[in-house]
Image (cartoon, rainbow, N blue to C red; front, side, top):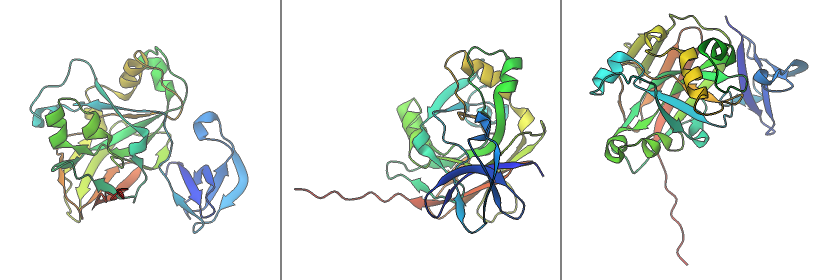
Amino acid sequence: MAQRYVRVQTKAGQLYYGLLHLDRRIQVLDAPPWLKGQLTDQELAPDSYHILAPCAPSKIIAVGKNYQKHAAEMGGEVPKEPLLFFKPPTAVIAADTPIQYPPQSERVDYEGELALIIGDRCVDCTPDEARQKIWGYTIANDVTARDLQRRDNQWTRAKGFDTFCPLGPWIVRELSAGARLQTFLNDAPEPVQSAPINEMVFSPEFLVSYISQVMTLLPGDVILTGTPEGVGSVKVGDRIRVEIEGIGSLENAVIAKQVAEKAID
């Protein structure tokens, strides 16, 4: 099994990056691993922490319609250049943290995706240089308020709600080019999405290179590489599980967002 790098919080509230062992012990790093963090002698017992999203990015850049069949199911063609959009860092949640269904939307969709973690400052990189800037890989769910996306004609609101970027549960350094991504809804045995990641139109290194010619990528930044065909809607009470061979699985339930009532003076 590939080494699994995690970000955790102890019961006392301390944050650590570390290496997750098979027995769920964590060997603590003295810094984020992409900042050359080294293993220390400190260990965390399995019952002393909970797993957070594996990084805290300065920005999340996502790519639309990067699988040909998904572009077709959305009623369009693959763009001639990568179609970029942002998700805010405040959208990030960990595995097993609920996705909050916002009251503004009547149609929320799952989108299982491979996420790239940037390991070094990246500006105007070639694809070959960009390959060296990808520190690792994790799983993401690009949750989308589809009705708002269509209504707004741009994607900031539809993609940007709090909890709309489940990420994790850990990062691995290497991944097979033919690793399969699958998304499961509730207890259904058959996946609603299933495709090898090498069906992407624009490869990970091309995406990193392309984005780096627009904006500076910083260590810990996240790039969502697009979703394959099979996206669909969720309702309150559903559970979505995204699996990628060689990484693991990311599962989140859907709950109704509770809007606090403010007192009127």
